[in-house]
Image (cartoon, rainbow, N blue to C red):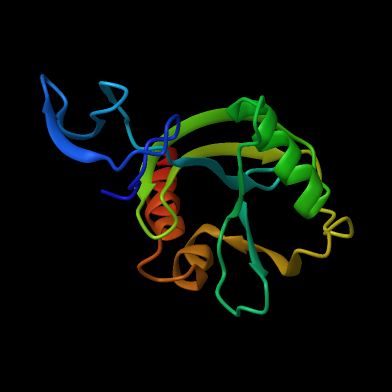
Length: 164
């Protein structure tokens, strides 16, 4: 149980079985179940305009190649977050957006929602301060270059399989 206190009254939460939901934090003072909060984020498999290459990035001093990703801001939806994050991080506009799948990442308590899309350009001159390096890779090279064992790799492999 991650959250220890009620978000409304501050009372200590206890674990209690909720019908059809399993064990859920419960506030005895408010007499309410307090379903755990989590973050929501997008990740993007960005294809080149001719759809033969995949964009991978490195950021925050890491040499690991990953996918563009970002958190959903309060009031945003997944699609607006996808477009905003891609524009902010790598300066690209995308089209032909398709939702692929989602996975929960326990390390950051985040539901990651993955999309496949095509960029309008291969021009990476618009990358921002969050990106240390961005490059286009063939499908085969992207598979070998992406961070092994990562959620990004899982999403990439699924997407490539769906494109066959």
